[in-house]
Length: 168
Length: 198
Image (cartoon, rainbow over all chains, first blue to last red; front, side, top):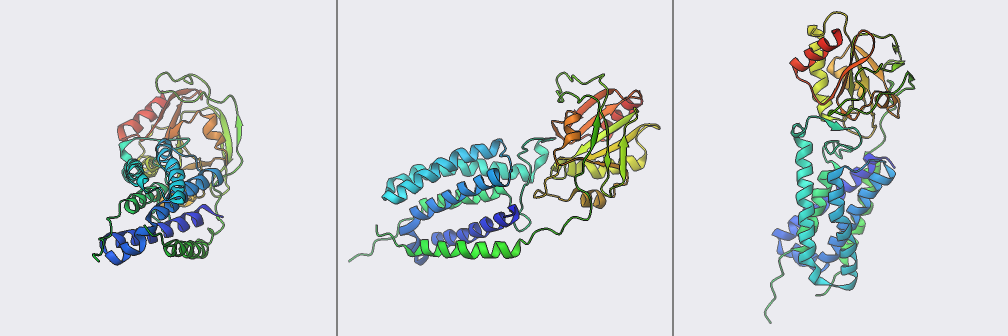
């Protein structure tokens, strides 16, 4: 499978996920629908992000740059922890996991702006430049942007406002 | 808290739909009509990797290289001579900014008489930004000598490249007099030519 196809695949899922999570934040009916599964959904997002990054590095051969490794340091443990927590129903992981995802999101956003404004440096490292755009799904969505959306989705799912309890 | 399975089922459906769309939309690139990478012949000792603090290659003879250009025309840089070599990677934003203005400077005749300029297209990544490099060079309007490196970037390695863009300057004897990385401005490009001219 070509990297462009894989990038398009993940970009489509991330865009759909963004619409869903954004809707959950603004529309209570959507939140009622997603909230009970939000921990599992966050685990799916994190695991998918981890799988995608591994595919790009191990199958497509894109060597992760320094910033990619920092983001991996946040996402990989997060994916494992969320999958286990979702399987066991450990809800108290939400806040610390959201914190880790927040750190990853910050790094990803820095990476994204570095690609947008590469003049912060004057050259591209020959081996694995952080300014390099290995894929551009839909002509614009790069891997760091996908990572940023993934982290944001995890944060958004784990911190969904509670559903008001209906009084009996 | 009651956990509903239906959102996960929706996710599963979305995964299948996304896979189908991605497969249909991303039909592979058309076979390139230009040569993006090609075998090269390199003679002479490779230069040590560039170290800005203390360049070990100063005074060393530059390797002789030969190969082809994007249109398969033979390119031979085998005779010693005053030259400026410019190494460009299509995916590097700094190269993308540098190549068009280098083309302008060459048209203006900023290099001294007798100093040649050789552009080397290297580090080609088919899935990366601004591919194929042949289209990029054509779009920029570059009409000078272009040597296409092989898929392993052998010419870049032979010249000790560590970052892009990369410049190597040789004197009339073919010995390296200067190397640097990163974008150069107008005065810097003029200086490269003057170093080559000796």
